[in-house]
Figure 1 (cartoon, rainbow, N blue to C red):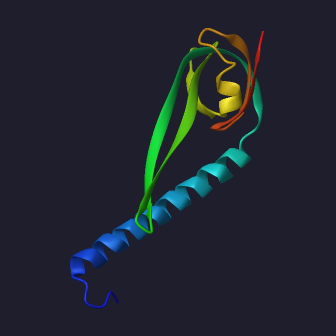
Figure 2 (cartoon, one colour; figure 1 turned 30 degrees about the horizontal axis):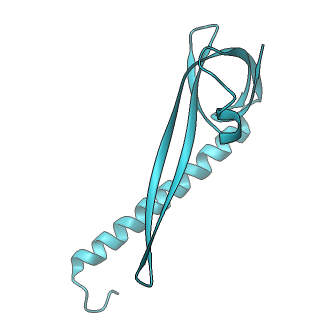
Length: 117
């Protein structure tokens, strides 16, 4: 299958393929599960914010290209003291401040909107 490559490289290649497939299945499963959930609008308070920066390096014809992407998260607390952390788009993240109270609209793990009251 892999010509003259040692079996070790074939095993590593297969492990990478399996990990990619698992991540695709998890993503599709989460997307489907969110679609099955009702869209809820509830009173919530912003208790924390965080961001995660991913760095990626790509080598193309001897030139290394570095890219970064930032994912934003906000933790909301409900009147029942339950909390949920949701991934939030960058254009909403900057306008929401810790301590804000308002109406959170979400569907499963999918953020829709937050309106300050």
